[in-house]
Image (tube, rainbow, N blue to C red; front, side):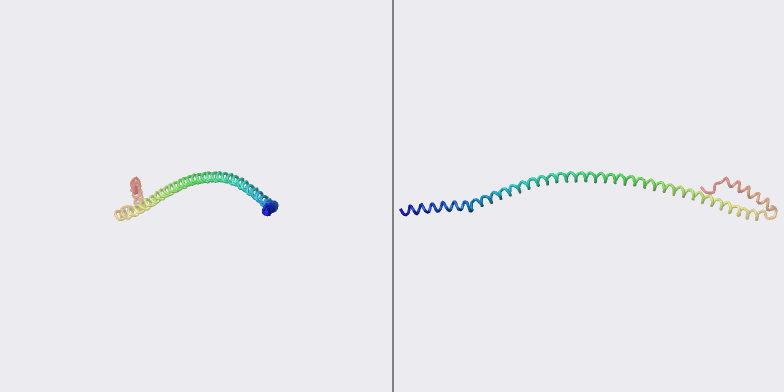
Amino acid sequence: MTTVWEWFWQVLALFLIIVILKKLLFQPVTDFIEKRRQLIAEEVNTASSQKKQADALKIEYERKIKDINREADTILKDARAKALTREAEIIEAAKAEAQNIKHKATEDIKLEQEKVKDEIKTQMIEVANLMASKFVQSSIDDSKQTQLISEIIDEMGDVQWLS
């Protein structure tokens, strides 16, 4: 009988220990676990909403990058077109300058040819005058000599000296 009473007291003590432990330990641990579960659920929800926001921002930034790339391409195309236009203008200006230089050189050549013709005529007059004076020293006076030389020069003026 003593064993039944001992068993009874042991079961009763065990039951009391379980009730005390439940009140002292089990309830606070359960509350702690529940709070922890709620905190984790909130963090998961927050992370999920932040991920959605990040995805939305990523899509927006990708769209902006595409727009920027398109704008950069447009700017580059415009710059190339302007460069080609400027290149054509520079080439036309260079051609016009070359034409002007060529025209001026042609004019300078013509002026130089005229100078040379005049110098040759002057030298021919001098040579003709010298020759005529040697041939006709005694019989022709100066006015007759000048008249003959003028006639010879007029006849020679029809001949082109420089081509």
